[in-house]
Amino acid sequence: PSAESSKLGHVEKGNTSESDAVSLRALAVKSRLEAEKMDLKLTLSKIEKLEKRILQSNKNPDISSNLTEETQRLIQKLEVPKSTSNAAGLLLEGQGSEKVPQPSNKSDCSTISNDQIEQTTTLTMEKVPMSADKRNDAVEGFERLPKQIKDMMAKTVGLEDGKNATAVIEKLMQENRLFEGDGEDKFSMTAKAEDIKDIITDLEIAEITSFVESSLPKSTRKEPVNEEDANAFYAEVLGLDTFNPFGKPENVPGGFLIRGENKVRPKDGREEGDLLIEALDKKLAVSSVHGKVNVYYILDPTPPSGEDILNDEDELPVLLITSSDISPSTDALIKTSISLIGVTSIAIFTLGSFSFNDTILNKLSSAMDTAGGNVDWFYDLSTPLALSILSIQLAHELGHIIVAFKDGFQIGLPTLVPGFQFGLTGAITPIRSSPRSLKSLFDFALAGPLMGIILSLILLYSGLELTAFMDLSAREQLPSVPVQILRSSTLGGGIIEYLLGDGLLNTPNSDDAVKLHPYAIAGFGGLVTNALSLLPIGNTDGGRISLAFFGRSFSRVAQGFALLLLAISGIFGADESNILLSYALFAQFWQREAEIPCRSEVDELDSLRGFIAIGMSIFVVLTLVPLK
Image (cartoon, rainbow, N blue to C red; front, side, top):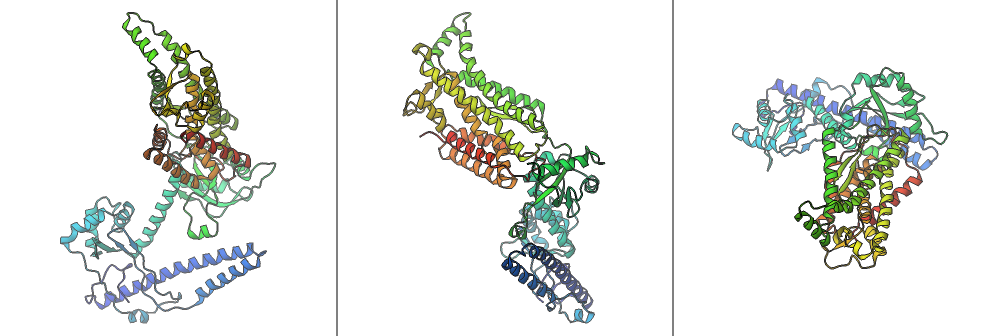
């Protein structure tokens, strides 16, 4: 056979004693048989799945015939005897690639006699052992490997992780498992066969961990569930009348997954997911783990296999078991401080809106130069704008509060987020306990922006009407907004031009300012900030709507697409006022975390909510696309 490595270490050509050769050949055969055993198990698993699909496709003869042929082919694969093959090996190259050669042939599972072992030719290694003077090159190559590969290589030599590159390389050299690399590779190494299974398992765990942690927020992992509680839930809560499990609980970051079949069926207009959670809660209330764990009916957050995707078996419903408390952790001092900064930014924006008005500036300057000058008149002018901005945000939060109260879940106090262009960017309102369903999450996320938009439109229209019919002397006292800001919204700018005169915003100098009533300024700003909150990013209102509409997996794609568009708009000049780019940076740093899971995330939204989501998407585009 050609040179290979798997449970073997390495054997230098021509220098191996006869007894060592026999031992090595025996290990090679054993390794091959173990690989064939795994292949047989996989083939049997495929046959079992095909048989199930045949039973389900009896009504379609063509499909049933094709499935039957595929089953027969796999059965023949099990029956055909094959010749003895080389041992499979694993070689990890110094640049982080993995080579896992497949057995060239597979044999039946008959016992290999000593005579067959003796007839196996001497195994040779074509790799040149690493010399001590090239150890530094190996260390350098090792440090450039991905962290997961470094950790796995370290574990094969008994170290906890790959942080100490020198120690790993020293161990590999001591075990004669390090060789000079080919071409640009600094080194290559052989992996012990007993480590191969651990390496593959580590890769699978790393992939599952990555998927789950990207789908579910950190708060679901702050108090991991222990295995005893998960097994108690499995034994005391599940059953043929609620959820029939297919296997034992599977450990995932923060909790456990239980795969199985929902035995509860829809009735009285209620969805099966909602009814399942209700039935499980009743049993959980009288179980030994009441108050310790909580259960969620969600789509499988673990990575699907290629076969699962082909068979349309990816993202099947599963139960997620977590600790009873998955509420996001917040720092009251930080929240209060940010909110105070938000209030300050409203005051700064309000005062700044008068900085374009020469009449007001001259009057303020005169008052400051006069001893005991009275500026109360200025507070009277600026207060309506500040209160209007706050009123829009309060209306937004009131919408959230109404839905949360109606559906019986808890939310935290909002944190006012400062903004440069309109005084406020918005507010962060955390959900502290899980909504009952995706419909409830959708209603909660929509209610806030909807209330804010309605009040913004009312204030915008009222302010423009007051501006249009105001006498000249009163208009000179009004705050101003740069034309560049007013052009940032097709919808808002269009309404302004419609009511105040076509061409008002078409001035060649974008730094020119337009005097508007405080209601109109607050209404325009509220229109834009509420539209921004509907963008599908993280745990913003738009991110929550996206999650309810598309599910967790595709909502992450929508988030990436939205952030990319915002970044492109800011970088390539489509967003002259930098409103979109500023919001993208804010959302990416402050609201990128996924939302906590709903109790049931399997039942889909109804058509009405779907049409509303589409309508709100159109509104967002009209509001955030700049006026040309």
